[in-house]
Image (cartoon, rainbow, N blue to C red; front, side, top):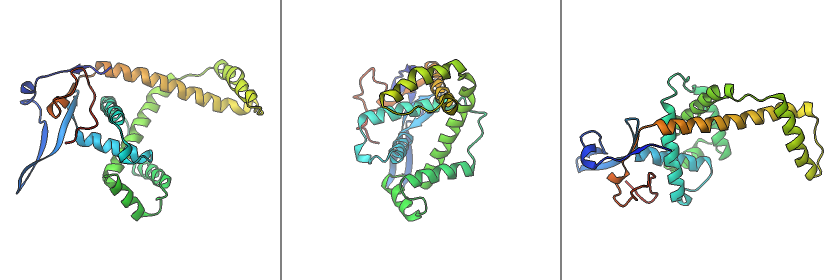
Length: 241
């Protein structure tokens, strides 16, 4: 669980900038709000909003379909990503070619791989800029690389585990469907990779829970919505900046 520390607004004001102001000829206009502090680093509304828009685009979901539960989940993922980032000082940054390859894949899923105009219209529909998407794609690559490098050495799979999966899990499944089971030799590499990924997922989940338990997270949402429940550490979907 995230360690949540509650602080009165009076104590926070001297320490944190709760609103980013854009001063124009017409006066001061609020353009962003701080919603949390993760290990003394601010998390803003605009970051959460961009994260949700990007995820919606990746999953082919209209923005109008996003729910309060989606915002709660996105908020938790954003906090988790910020906590994880502090462990990633040594990870190699995503290269331009890696980022371009993943961008091409995303565009292909929207049939916009070669159509720049269609891609621009899609980004506009989701309220994203090309630079924002490029940065979030690069971040995805870096996080996945870091987890792969850290967790794969911990996810060791024995021959017995592969054999047990083949004989006790896969064979009964195939027989129940009336199919023909391929030989152990043919399937063993795929089974090993599947079991490795499962173990990596389990190890990653345990590690992230440890990091979250150790993190110093201050929720600032009371600064923008006073009606939040006293024990609620999530961001309500209906609140707008």
